[in-house]
Image 1 (tube, rainbow, N blue to C red):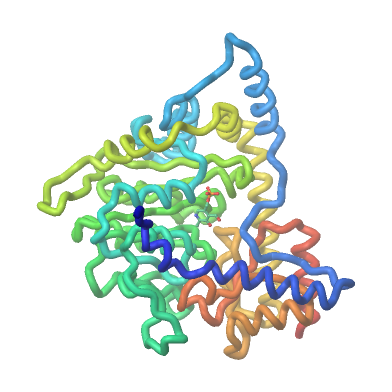
Image 2 (image 1 turned 180 degrees about the vertical axis):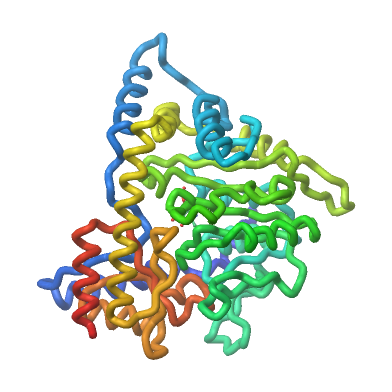
Amino acid sequence: MFTINENYLKLQSSYLFVEIAKRVKEYQTANPEKKIVRLGIGDVTKPLTSEVIKALHQSVDEMSQAETFKGYGPEIGYEFLQTAILENDYKKRGINLELDEIFISDGAKSDLGNISDILGQANRVAVTDPVYPAYVDVNVMGGRAGIYHDELQKNPQKGWSNIVYLPCVAENDFVPDLPKEKVQLIYLCYPNNPTGTVLTKTQLKVWVDYAIKNQALILFDSAYEAFITDKQIPHSIYEIEGAKEVAIEFRSFSKTAGFTGVRCGYTIVPKALLGYLSNGEKVILNKLWNRRQTTKFNGVAYIIQRAAEACYSELGQREIRANIEAYLNHAKIIREGLQGIGLTTYGGVNAPYVWVKTPQGISSWQFFDILLNNIQVVGTPGSGFGPSGEGYFRLTAFGSLENTKEAVARLKDLR
Ligand code: PLP
């Protein structure tokens, strides 16, 4: 008899997007003539830029000739892409890295999940709340989450017993407080999904200092770094002194360059970052991750890495910036439109998400139903991202300009 990883049975069904899809479908079936505007799911809508497409075509042609054909590439990525990342995303911000500290992958989600392989099961995990759900589920699979308490069990504590939730709400300006109990793994995502808020260097330094003092590891997800407009906001955690000793950084071309369907990202594991054996002995985490990747992963397709490289040419950068500016303009339209009808919004300045306080204390799901039934606009109920998301609602700036304007016009009718 073989046995399974029973942690998988503990996973809660991904209720959020399933429930949204169900309610939208029921509404559309009952009201086929109504046009629904969707600002719910965080996927891009703009096509790949011309520089990226050009690089894809060229590299596909290379694959057709014996002299330029590429088979297996280096598991951790081609040097041409590692170099482009280093020069553009790090050196320009005063951060130096070695090329073998940059691991190319098929996206941030994979790495955020796979990193669990090299981390011990006994670590106590902290997540900001609300949170990108994958961080929690990965730790459920890895046996670190404990028991799930839900409201039905009438337990005063919601969520997982071994996960420390760090509330990020209007009352604390969406800045998480340090945990009261000791934690070893800390997931931070800035600019944040779902709240669209950011941390200043001083606020981020508090976490780096905590990690240094407590021998903890920060898993820093900066998938939305390209949306930062405020010059004071750090793009990389390595802008903070000491961070190379305590943080892994995850990045993605998904939202930066429209690669959600193309798949490319990268993870920085500095050699200065040490992990601990249970007897306190130290190991270099970079070596462990390298071993994990070279054993379980055979690299990202050559043509995709060429496409990612094209994002860094002068024209490539201009094209990508234009798309990001357009999405940020959608966020502004949403923000200003909602504020104009008296709603309170957060985020949406350095991020493609606008986090809305639901009016008159109504719940996230009640607000969802009101928008769907009265004006046919779909967003995401904040409570789906964690207990502290209750009373909030997420709208994304990744729709088309037309849909964004339409949604805001309809919201004005709601008044
Ligand atoms: N991290 C955050 C916070 C995200 O919101 C997303 C996607 O929505 C990802 C990671 C996944 O990125 P990728 O497409 O590179 O896997």
